[in-house]
Amino acid sequence: MTCFRVLLSVAVWLAALPAAPSGAENWPHWRGPLFNGSTTEKGLPASCDEAGRAWAADLPGHSSATPIVWGDRVFLSSTEPDTKGLLAMCLSARDGKVLWKKRLGNDVRAPRNDGATPSACTDGRRAYFLFGSGDLAALDLDGSVIWARNIAQDFGNLCTKYGYSSSPTLWKGKLYVLLLRRPRPYYGPAGTDKPLDSFLLAVDPATGKDIWKHVRATDANDEAHESYGTAIPHEWKGRAELLVQGGDYLTGHDPETGRELWRYGYNPSRISMWRLIPSPAALDGLVFGVIPRGGPLFSIRAGAAGRLGEGAAIWTFGGRTTDSTTPLVYEGTLYVLQSDKADPVVRSSPVSPGIFLFAVDPQTGRDRGQARLADGGAWRASPTGADGKIYCISEAGEVVVVQAAGLKILSRTSLGDGPTQATIAAAGGRLYVRTATKLHCFGTKAK
Image (tube, rainbow, N blue to C red; front, top):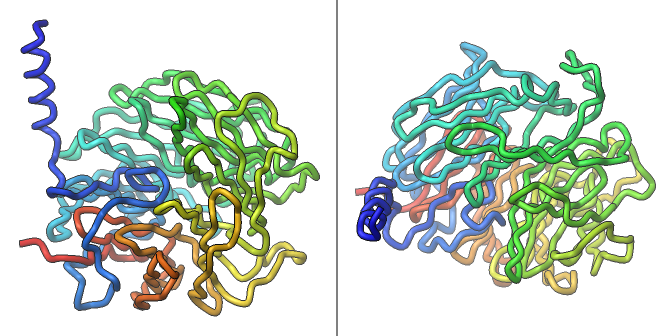
């Protein structure tokens, strides 16, 4: 093929992709375009009140999945109680009109959870949906299924007590699926006579076929095997890594092969109840993890090799941090949103006098300030950073917007309609806020 034809082919392919508004970023992944909860979006509202609402769309059922936005389309996972189904949906970003919906599986129930918790992801050509049932599929922008498979059928019972919740990660031409689980299921058949393994899986986005599967060994006990988090990409000084936390270890993996590059153990006492919900975060060669059940935040250096000793932690940030929310990296600062005042299961859990958003120096772990968001309640959705603001939402549907510089609270808005666990997405000059039965869009109304 001549050089001219190659360039022409690339130009045609680019032209076929949905365009984002000028100067706007998409929100293609649960943790946004930078995989850290932040975006460069500007001109976003400082509150989510009725006056700034562009539209609100009714949804078929509950889900904790974050809205995924590309150009003029919003991709959503949802339950459908009437049919006990799991849906892939696409809405118009302009007015919230449902463009299509596709039933991809049967809902599965778990304590305080359903099968539509994992968030979708997209590259602007296809949208990829993963559900707690194990159903994994790629759809084109018109809603046609390109390929579909079920990872539970392929690899056995997903074996997480509160329902499989990890979101897929699309990066560098591969779709990554993380499954950190118990060797034996709590309920239902295992699907194999052998103990179930935990693994990181790379899938070809075009065909749905496995590229590689890396078994991730652990000596964790019981519930501590489990992670509800997501694999997070990080690049530093020319080295790319996939960061994975759970099963008592934080590990770095080669995205081309899955090979484990390094691991750091954070549970030397092998506490059996330490299942993990937050995902890791990273900034400038530093990787941040959270000890389960609201324990300390810690930092280690990326680019390591082999098994790291207890002294590998550069710093720890103590007190009660988060049991559920993933830390946010925004404008050179690490933000941690407390999810609860205390862990109701662990009697010795530290207790906080309220719900706080902490700003932490990523280099030293020192406290840069804090904002008290509420007296209590549950805050399960991870914070979002954009336009100089931090957006947080409680399980009861209260949106609190905090000025990143100085941590001044700018607004409080009660949307109600809980339970709400979905992260707020920012794209195209708008905020997309999912509550139990609706998707709200705040920002400049489309002309």
